[in-house]
Structures are given as C-alpha cells and as structure tokens.
Length: 130
Image (cartoon, rainbow, N blue to C red; front, side, top):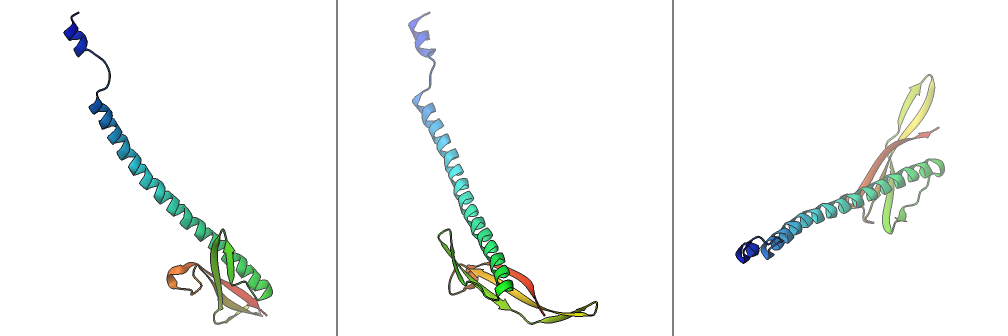
C-alpha cells in the first residue's frame, strides 16, 4: 500500500461533519425547549384551575352550613378572591312538600377588583331553605 492510499483512506470525522451535527442537534434542542416551556405554562394553568375549583367547592360547603364564607384566600403563594351571590328563589312542589331552592353562584377571581379576565372558576349550585 502506498502512502497516498493511506492518507485518502483515513477514517474519522472532518470538521465540517462535526459542525453540521452540532447545528442539527441545536435545532432539535431548540424545538424541545419550546415544547417544555408550553408544558410548564399549561401545567401552571391547570394547577390554578384545579385549586380554584376546590376552593369554590369548599366555600360552597361552608356557605351552606354557616351562611358565611371567607372572601380572600392564599394558596400556594397565590391569592384567590371568592364572591358568592344568591340568585332569585324558585319554589318546587314535590309530593305535597314545599321546598324553597335558592340558586347560588360562586365565582373565584385572582384579582381583588374582580375583573372578568381574572375569573378562574364559576360554580353554580342550589341551597335548600325551609
């Protein structure tokens, strides 16, 4: 074998091949970072939504038993503001018993001024009044 053949038959990666592979990996990782940031944002939104739903259900239970509720709550370093409104009452006759059901709505906000954009949960229920 001659020296020319040995030089042309060397195995290994050239600088251009290494640079191309680094660029390809950079493109792949950049796409993955966008995916992970969206996942974190979506997870945070869902955590906020679940927390506000649980708070609304807790306030509903408290309001039904004591007819009062806490208006401001801090959970996981985030403030939630609860508003409970009684709507008009409806009477229903069921097997000669008259029960007054009062519809109520529980709204949970993340802003104390109760702006529509800060509304996270709206829960509707009925409260029985005898």
